[in-house]
Amino acid sequence: MKPIKQTLIAASILAAFLAPAAPAFAQHAEHVVVAQAPAAAKVAETAAALRDLWVGHTFWVRNVVVDTLAGNKTAAAAAEKEVVANAKQIAAAIEPFYGKEASDKLFGLLAGHYGAVKQYLEASAAGSKSKQDAALANLTGNAGEIAKFLSGANPNLPFDTLNGLLLAHGGHHIQEIQQLQGKQYAEEAQTWGAMKKHMYVIADALAGAIAKHFPAKFS
Image (tube, rainbow, N blue to C red):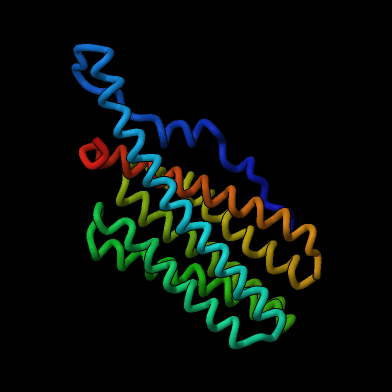
């Protein structure tokens, strides 16, 4: 598989997500600056929390990959528990905005995402091309499902943008598995760095979109 390039994510898209809406009927420039400062701080705080959660996802999935390829079932099982716990935390992060039902839905979709990654990992370990292809199809389909769910919940999250972000993320998982299995450790280190930066893009986009959707919660 060719490396997934970060250029899939345009800077202009991030700017659109994160730009605060112009305050209506502002009477004084000073008031506008003061009003926007707390909002920007809250958006940054939310983005930082989401960054931590999404990077945690890649960290623990990577541990599962490393331990599985090393044949350490005990360590892999422990890492997998952390993957699940992390997915619950990511899903819980949207509950204050979209409710418990939406949180549960997202958790199920994230479980499907991890399931497809694990399916590809196991297929790779077994050397089964057909099972790898099936896992890739599941991973691609799941990305579309997550994008559809989130874009449906938030009008500031375009489906095509989200789908591209999630497909690139899935591609990073696949590339990482291939490189670790092939003992291409220097190359995998580069992929790991790209994965983390990509998680920042996703987290920042989500934070900005949520802030636009619920401005009162960020004022």
